[in-house]
Figure 1 (cartoon, rainbow, N blue to C red):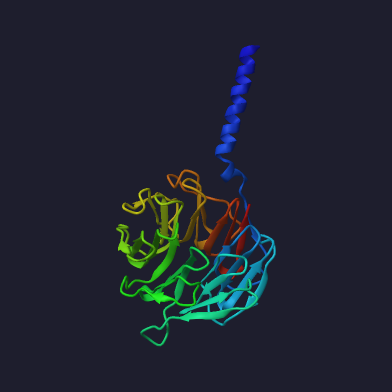
Figure 2 (figure 1 turned 30 degrees about the vertical axis):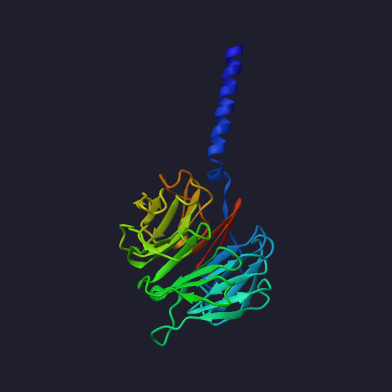
Length: 313
């Protein structure tokens, strides 16, 4: 009888461990939310569990105050808006073709802070935007554009001659340590708040669209043809991870060193619970291209083509 009790206890404990280990993959469900628009959405950001924004074509900017259950639409420009970033419920920025706009009112009104001057008639697009604080932020884009502000955007400095590539993504894990990725396998890294940038060897030649670090050492980069690169030493060495797809991956985000997501073409969502040693397709209701993912605590949001918004919880 005692052996049976021990056996039952062993089975119960094993089941609890199993459920704990797979909680992220079993219980997390991505559901499609009505966005109220058919415009393509390229960027999404939440400053807390309730307040979020999404931006896209035809100058559309969506906002939510209930965690993305419902969205309110506004049009602030005719340009395509490529990315949005908020540091408080009031202070936020969005990027577009050669321009950065700012709001101090939670999006009630916006004003242009900066306009990039290009060599040709058309200014280079600003493709990604990341603020490490309410005062300090970075923006990257076409023709090697790297912009930096330390006063909330009142003045933007253009870091010229660091790269001549189209730069698609920027991410900082703290105010000092950041990475920029772009076409032809370009990876730039700073560990002194951008005073000096060094080129890291990616061993890739295709476009790299997004980069994310969970901490100072563990990071991931995604690109075309299902490419995922991973580092465990801050980018001194980037190694390819196996993926079950060959579609382009447009964004990547991790909760910690182990649990992460990558999104891409035709509604593709990949998920890992072991840092990317194994990536697997994840159930998705989306059919259109997915462009951006944002995680906040136990929730997540994905946006994409034709007004696609997914909410995971």
